[in-house]
Image (cartoon, rainbow, N blue to C red):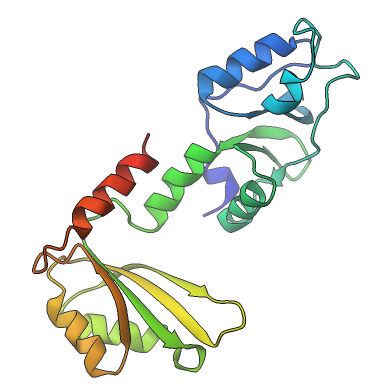
Amino acid sequence: MFAAEIISDAIPSLRADDTVQKALDRMNDFKLKHLPVVNEVTLLGLVSEDDLLNIDNHDTLLNDSAVNMLNVFVLSNVHAYDVIRLLSQLKLTAVPVLDQQKNYVGLISINNMVNAVAEQYAVNEPGGIIVLEISNRDNSLAHIAQIVEADNAQVLSSYVNSFEDSTRLEVTLKVNKTEITSLVASFERYDYLVKEVYNNTQIDDGSQERYDSFMNYLNV
């Protein structure tokens, strides 16, 4: 998934002759703390709510020297992971997207990014979730997939998380069925450490309710 596929068409950019107040109003409308300022197709920069609130006169135009603009953007062909990294590192709620000629083509909001990740990882698809802890020397996704397929299931998505100063890895699997007791047993039979299980219809431990609450939170 690339940046060009996640652009929102619903969020207009600001103009250099817009006022600070207009920028703040639009941020409030779209529940964002950052918006791009664009002159036709040229990105002038990204303004933040915190910086604008520090300007006493809200009639100040955005092209005024008192307005701080961040030189932040991604190119349309970068991977979604790079967008996530930038949003996370700079604590942004939106990031501008430019084409290969450095023309402004749109904006990716953090809500767009959450929805895109949810789609990429099959979050909205019914299925069970299994979290395995393995050694990095045993990191064979092919073998893990074979175990899943032998249980008449398929891997919808997977994610590998590493830990600093550790040889252990955490592998999160989303599979396409919710009765996963036998699959969990299969992993344990192959000496995989099953750390967590979610959405297993055979074990009502409240995990489904917690999972649904988390998804509702993401969709707020």
